[in-house]
Length: 234
Ligand code: ATP
Ligand code: MG
Image (cartoon, rainbow, N blue to C red; front, side, top):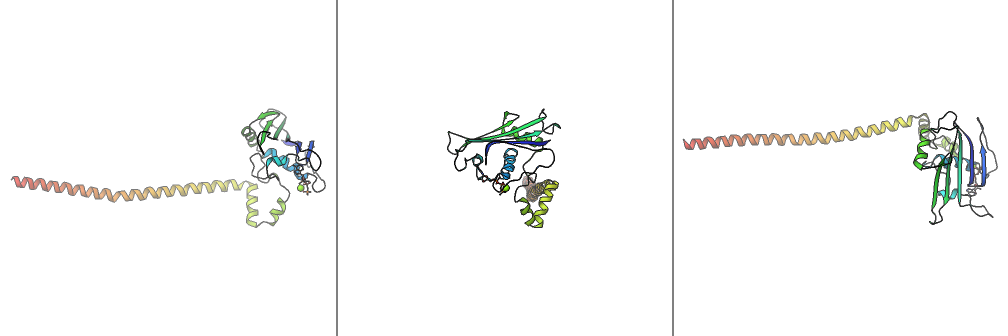
């Protein structure tokens, strides 16, 4: 599986239909500052990370729609398609090519509102179906699959502990650390529950003894009463 092509329409600085082909191997995109290189990475994140915490550089989704620049009318929707070569069927779709599309359009009825749609090979899909397909194909915009501008500088200047955390994350160790922490939390909770049970049990035991001794003394009293009664009768 590999990304063959990105198709964008009215996405950020690309105020028209534009396609960026990727060949197998290494592709580099060059251009002057502000020409839209990072916007291409944003386009990938826009499609692959509908639930990703990794921020697209935009205040809100509708900021991703082409704003018309200085002298043209802004568009009212944008869309990005990622076309994957799927001849190895890593994406669970029975097709050699898989096109994943996301569309965002302004909603005319609600001020500031928008509609967001997802398509798998041009067939409309729900967010959960789209998300589950990405998960099954192990495609994610999380972590460091996508290294954005400034990421390297941030990694170089961070503390060694933070950097270690990133390496652990890439190596997949963080997942195990999370599991360990979760198990540790559960163990603590269980121990606290056990402590509470022990405290209640030990709080009850002396009571039972005292009830036991009370009842035996009651028995002996009643016996002595009986005997005294018997004695009286005698
Ligand atoms: P650099 O080399 O400085 O990193 P870059 O090639 O990565 O630059 P980008 O950050 O991708 O450039 O693009 C920035 C440009 O995108 C800006 O000129 C900005 O005005 C434009 N832009 C961002 N959002 C929109 C939008 N919604 N409509 C039109 N243009 C937009
Ligand atoms: Mg950039």
